[in-house]
Image: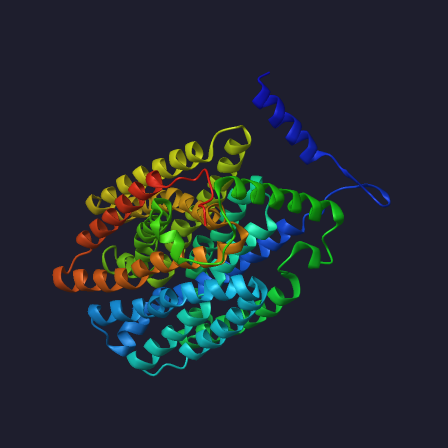
Length: 449
């Protein structure tokens, strides 16, 4: 056995050994995994709320008599404020801790979602969507910060994808849930009000369970706390070796290629994902002739495939890293391959006429696209625990530029051409940007800031 493999085997054995405590043998608790399951549920609810308008859009468009251009503007409203708030909220997370920010975010976006159910026309719905964008902004950067605090370095790939997998899961479940609520209550408005109320309750659960430090959590025993603190010590030692000083700042990162690769990679990713999230249901209704029920189930299948793919991507990445492969080899191989499949799948959707085949291809696209959820481990890789919040905010700001540009561009394309072909080719271009970026990023070291 090589020295490297011997060391890895020893570390693995130590990771699986029980730790001695005051009362004899003590096994590590698993609060960190329970916390991330809560975050998975939280992000799922987040995407149910933000995607609810897309599922109800065929009804809303008819009720408000909206042309495609105004539909695109309405779909983009959320992303305007969501993107603009990312860097400020990332700074707040680093300064005040993720627990307070996420709790306030849940209560605020629940109230805004419920308010959107009272919209009387385009303008009031547009304002409500702006409010949802402001209040939801803290969730994902806070999740990136919690990944740096609560996950051992060997577990951060899974932590990142569990966090981010809530996006396709929420989008998929939202398609069924919102259509069911509309059918049950007879009103898209009541479905929004009920979804908002559920979100406020989630905020209370977040405050009850999440902590900014593992030792502040009553469920964490000494073994789990020591395990995480040992990983933090390794991170700090590696950061010192790379010349990082732990300074809380964003501007110094702007001179590094990896920072920009992170931002453009997330921009390209969201150009595809948000395009399908916002316009996908209307595409299935108008281009493929699906009714509301079929849209709901098709959305569930497409985004459900994304959820499965994302969880699998995190497991593969962590296990491959544990075998001794470098971070660059693992991430560039997985994310580069996923980019190629996404480009090919989207090109396929533009040429197939059969609606079932289109749903299958879109499911394959989402399965591999969501591997890029591994990006939520990058803020802690590049910035450590000190700057994971603000770097996560910068990354999500970049990604959500695509969030507010894409729905508008697609609306203009569909309005001008009467077809979705060029819109799908726009998604292909976004996937190419993503592919170039994931290969340019250096995943091996913390940036010296």
